[in-house]
Amino acid sequence: MVDELFTRKNRVLFIIHDLYQEDNPFPLGPAYLAAVLHRNGASVEAYCMDVFHYTNEHLAEHLDNNEYDLICSGFLAARFRETVLDLCRIINEHKKDAWLVLGGHGPSPIPEYMLDTTKADVVAIGEAEYSIVDLLHCKISGGDLSRVAGIAYKEDEKVKITEPHRIVKNIDEIPFPLWSIFPMERYTTCFKFHNQEPGEKSFAGFLSSRGCVNRCNFCYRMEEGLRLRSIESIVKELKLLRDRYGVTFHSFDDELFILNKARLLKFEKALRGAGLKIKFDCNARVDFMDEEVIEILKHCGCQFLNFGFESSDDRVLKLMNKNAAMAQNLKALELVKKAGGIGMGLNFIWNNLGDTAESLKKNVELIKRYNTYHHCRTIRPTTPYPGCDLYYKLIEIGKLKGPEDFFERFKNSDLILVNLMDMPDEEAYRLLLEANTELILDHFKHTTGNMEEAKRLIQQFADLYSGKTTKFRGARHYAAEKREDI
View (cartoon, rainbow, N blue to C red):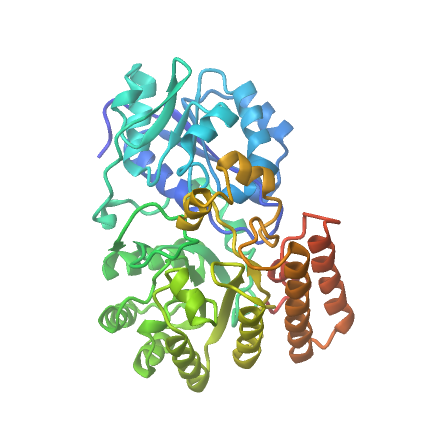
């Protein structure tokens, strides 16, 4: 339904900041917000610095030549000092009468800090499908920001935080992402997934649900609970992506794609009924795995299951509130391995509460035992991003002072931000380098056999851990640049 107050002259710009890589996921959050604004009658544009690698100077020229009501950008905390601060400076210098609106997981938990440091006009807190429409109303009508729910702003140099926004309970009500304003040819050709055929288009940007039933201590998701889209809506969107853009391979971004057997069976039946053949990767929890679930997944087109095991130590799993035990992890691994035909992503972190040298060794052993070698698996230290329970726990016990302290320390997600273990940093990095060296050598031994390439990758980690560089993007990105089959 078109909002009578909006016209196509009311312009909103979504800026997708550069990730300095070629395999760029589709910016799903901005695309949903753009769709909501477009449905209400506003004119919406996307400025994709991620795929085109536009410079800030190019952005400044674009803003000088255009007029907007809102200029919006979302980001994760990891990119704040590296990219977003300077981006906001450029926007503020060239935005004219527009409001700069920041959102996403990065600014949402710490809006006061973000307003002070970026000089943004507004921070949208959490999901913003309702807030963004109210914000545009407020901007073009000269309304009162205090009446817009789910935002933070400054008034008389004081930060004001309004009442929380309403959660979109029925997410089928949200329109499909506004793909038409994005360079879809770029987003559908930049990834190469396991079992993807040459020329087959893939898409890393699909949600069949929002939320999760659990709360791990390193998770910075704000909204509680799990909300599911209808199977009918999911299949309709999959068909549109196939018909409009030729996409047949999908990466489902859900935190919890596999919820139960009945929903999977309904999904399989709906795909058959629509004559829709797809391939996909998805995230999975171990407690939903059994032989029948795996077979249904294979029939649906699943090529790869990403498991967030995080640790092979039951004590650590309990302290991180993982709500899963090693016995369940091993059972899921054995089931998928026995069934065959589906690759596995074995994700582990270290330096959480309770971690030791022995827990790291266990992680390495488990990865080597069940590795399907579709990616070069390495182990990262836990990063207590603002918004997660671990972040607040560290503030409580005096190991972290707050957002300024976090960003002063943060340099790279493969580096230790706060050492939570009973050992010096030097020893932790020595053990981590030994562990990742073992995993990298094992990977190349079972894949290309190129030990020179393996040694170069190991040296990248050594340089990162020793402080010689902070720019290394991690083993999986490195491997994706070097090998077409990853």
